[in-house]
Length: 172
Image (cartoon, rainbow, N blue to C red; front, side):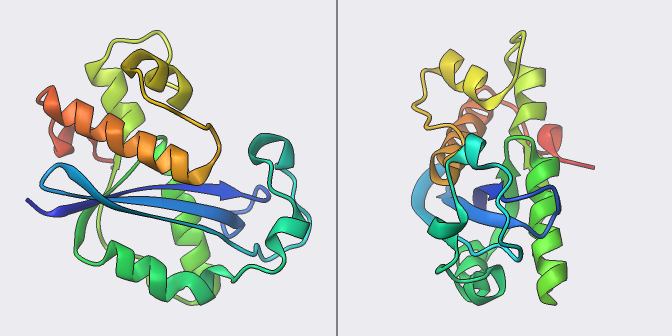
C-alpha cells in the first residue's frame, strides 16, 4: 500500500500563508512509521491566535520560514499518494497558500478529510477533533500541530479499519 501523510498546521493570522507550526505523520501499510514537527517563522510578526495554540512571535521569530523548511517538508511527503487532515480544507488551504507565497509547487497528492470520514462512519453529534478523539479514546494536546497530526492519523486508521475507503473521505 502507498504512503499516506497526515498533517496539521497552526497559523498566526487569517491568511493562508501564515503557517507557524506543522506536524506530519507518515503511514505505510496502514501503520504509523514516522513523525515530523517544526515551528515556522510566519511572514508577519503579529500572532493573532496565541490564545488558541500558545505560540508567540518571540517563540517563532528565530525559526526557519516555510520556504526554508520546504526541503524537509517535501522529503517527508515524498511518495505519499494521499494527504490526510482533520478539517482538510483548512490544512490544504494553508499548504497551498504557503507554497504559493514561497514560489513552490505544492504536492499533487489529493487530500482526504477525517471530519468527512467521521461524519460518515461514526455517527457522533459533533465531529470536532477533540470530540472524535474523546470518542475513540485517543490522547490529544489540542492545537499542538504534532498531536493534532497524530490524532488525524489515528482517526484515519480507525476509519479504514471500519472499512471506509479513501474515496469516501476525499476532498473534491
